[in-house]
Image 1 (cartoon, one colour):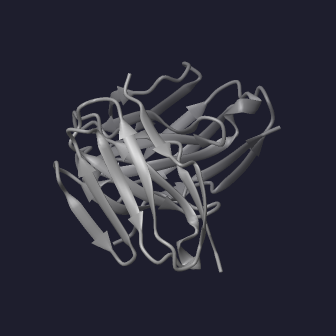
Image 2 (tube, rainbow over the protein chains, first blue to last red):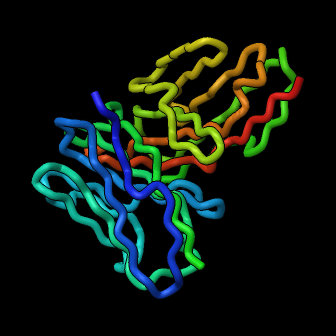
Length: 113
Length: 112
């Protein structure tokens, strides 16, 4: 069974640009959560999608958005990039959002210059 | 606001020694998770603790949960170099909506 995949794995963008990251969950999983990891703030929850609906959202500005498609694949978008958005972005999938079933992907390393 | 505090944040150990990492959290929750992260890598699930008094062991690592004290511990027995990594505890605030609140992590370095 394939694990959670994230693309791209590495990304370099310039301040002010926008970026889209993709997450493909484990087959059959309907919940996808996104997290941001930075040295200063640690691991922070961004949002969770289940069956194409955002069910939960962390404390991030509106520049961070996401969506989920009918095949459960999810994308997150960051507009007007700032230097502080440089981070490792992790997604995790589970059947229904239950944490004890959650599996993390390898992450996308975003660098904003 | 739910807070999760780990200590110590940095831990340098000699091989063969024992040590404990502590994880305190600020709200009632009976679900706590421990993860390991190697540099540049994703999170690897170590332990899932789902009730008060839960104790899980895997190799040289043992995790326990005391929901009344809002405290979890990760005990390392006879440390070896391969255990060098960053360890995170995380609390599930409930609601089955896929979010975890993480501690800042404990960076463990095991030296020969």
